[in-house]
Length: 199
Image (cartoon, rainbow, N blue to C red):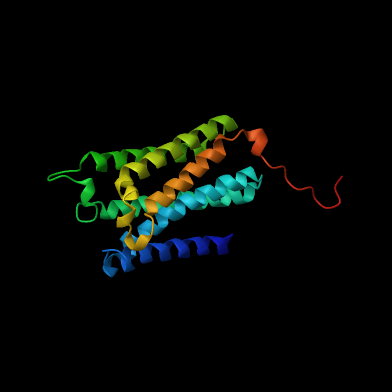
């Protein structure tokens, strides 16, 4: 799993460099935080999808691993974002004097998504309740991504180098995770393989 983790981080970082640095307007000076933050953000959604998929495979060890990795990567994303949250980095989030509606919605949905993910991770009660919390978290995550850059998704001709925005890719994986969680538990839960020699 560690090898897969390194592979995901490497690929998301490479994608971020190609889209924002090589084909975009971002300076190499912004590689350590701005571009890395893009990579971590997309990787977090992938880790979440891996965790849900392994839950459906009845592999609790991998589910726990990817869920924990996702939680830590989200924390890193939040910290990096807070360091560069300014008009210089995100001009479309700000008006002449303060943050505009788009910026405030992005923050609101991001905070709510993080809150529900945290509660879901700590919840030890019924499975249905935990799944509902995860679905709420994913809905807010999707809203966070939509409010952030939906105009950039529509204008394909403006995609840097023809590469889709990271927010759009993350949105697709977020919707996929919601779909997986909405499938009835008894239908999708794959029984564990019988151990060799068992009856």
